[in-house]
Image 1: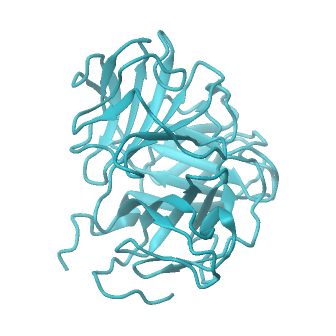
Image 2: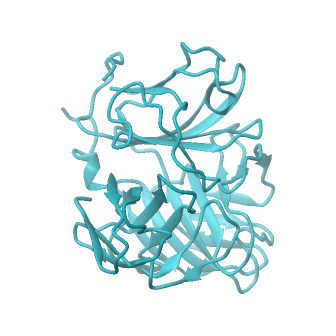
Length: 339
């Protein structure tokens, strides 16, 4: 079936669950590729979400539920491997006996200098899966940055590595103009007057504490929609347990949702922690909370259907943005059927 150029979504994104052992050199295998971006969360205890990527370097951690800058610590993640990654003995990522989720994305396994923008960036890009990791240094004034993708990113997640400031999430999918949200906060969206993006670059027309302070290093995670593999979009909740159905064109392996017109958390599901419907176990990207039930959704063969009246996912008349990545096998444009 010639549905997409990506025949095997798990070659580009995969969830891997693991149990900590508290010792340095704990190899997590079974990812299926060498990841360039690893996002981990302790499911059993209130430790932060930790993010590592191959562009910044293996020891450099960031936390989505905190405003902290980058933390250099060799006791957390110690290597990116051909089939996963290896951990140190830090309690943040490797408590003996605790259960963890890790979400893993493939970029290019290499970095390159990109001069498409007015300043040079360092980029690891996968144009097939529509994902790139971009490192650059802010100027504090108007500038553009090459992102390495083949088309305009639909959403970009920014973090200033050098300062205690919010994570920024920028998109034009909400209303056609550029808006931003904070990944570490519950805030509703706000209009962006300085950010824009094109097929080759993203730009800031002025200083931004989030992503363009003079002399401060920034990391950006860029995504665009790829048919049959990834879908970033919006929906409106109906406040009913027989909730809104959202078509993605594939069965989601990973789903993250945020209400953008009210103060609500970023809720995350995956099919490894939730192998059967009803998918009820959520994690919140903006908090260190443990995994909890009650975040009810059906992850269907070509989309997802909310099964809760909760305003965080399906409030009546509330508006939401979501990111989803595919599980295999892919499906075509047939009506949804439940797992």
